[in-house]
Image (cartoon, rainbow, N blue to C red; front, side):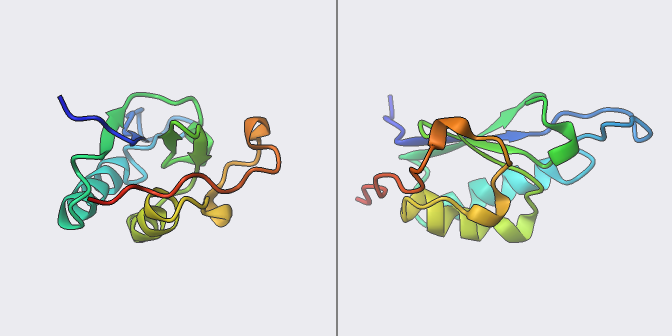
Length: 120
């Protein structure tokens, strides 16, 4: 069984198009997840970093939402174009992508950097 250093959970929850909260699927959640998987594989990271489909993360107005574990960092309004930056800066470099952070992340405190990824 592979040992993953990080998990990226991508909301792909779907609601009706006219739902007032919106939904991550309609905002491109599936495409964001697919791009994450594609780039992780292309960089040889798919054995240490896992991109997973998630149901509702209850941040619908902030979608597409991604949460990165073990750091518990929540990103919002993520687009396919943001995926490479998340991989390079956070997953590999160990630094959060400040411009995509959801506003309330009290567990981070002053900590904005994490251990870098151990590349094989």
